[in-house]
Length: 370
Image (cartoon, rainbow, N blue to C red; front, side, top):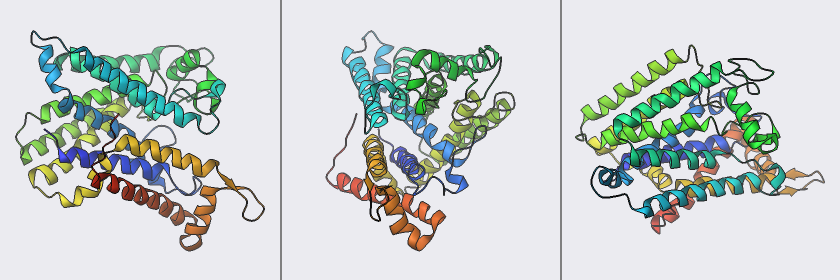
């Protein structure tokens, strides 16, 4: 079974990711397209967890037959574990390639990142799904979220004390400095927003997606199912906001409250896509997003390399060295749209260019899977 609505949702998530990651200038970005400065969240802070949630939903369909074998006398084939390991290693390696471009200074290479988080969260979630029942997965998810909250708020950190949730003083940052070393964190600093410890609650984001997908595939295709998804989403958002009163909603820390709130919004958007596409059979509007949702990892990696190429390639049109990206932004967008709108237009143009490329791949039936 394949849900077109899930492909469309994935396409919305990856298109949004490309949009917010590629402004013409980071000095000219509309507030809704920025991440929250620290606590709290904006629409931009929903994009990454949406993608993680979608990975979980897809797993409910892709490895469901192996979960059935788990409950029978058959053992899970070794090739399944090898496939999971292979996928994790490829994703992690691609993330390292992106982090290191263009110099690949191994002594200061950032180890973690978006693809690395996807790799670890996917791998851990897949093993849990293959070996645990639904109730056990629920229990594990609650244990991780509560345990992470306790660790972040009750473990004393040298020089920072207990419950310090600043970028430098939080438990996750301290753990990452000990495990990875400052040279291998984001920009050689004291904190990495995709660090190791904060990947634990990100695993729960994937597991919530799996539990949602596992429930969804057993339901009739009707508006009641869509309504129930919305109700579940609202419950997550409400509980998450209440939890946020004592453990703030925070994307860089991927706090437990953040997991619930973002999963809630993901459920609501999934419900909207499901109702329009699966229930009401109105598919044409979603086709552009479906095209992008069929090759998400290729799109993320390729767009990441191109963005870095534009930044690190220097030109001197007037004797002053500037990046190729800056030249394109200033001469092709600022000249007619101004700095702020030009920055947005650059990001939109980036999405459109990649859509044309992906449409060509769609026409050729090229699906690049990791």
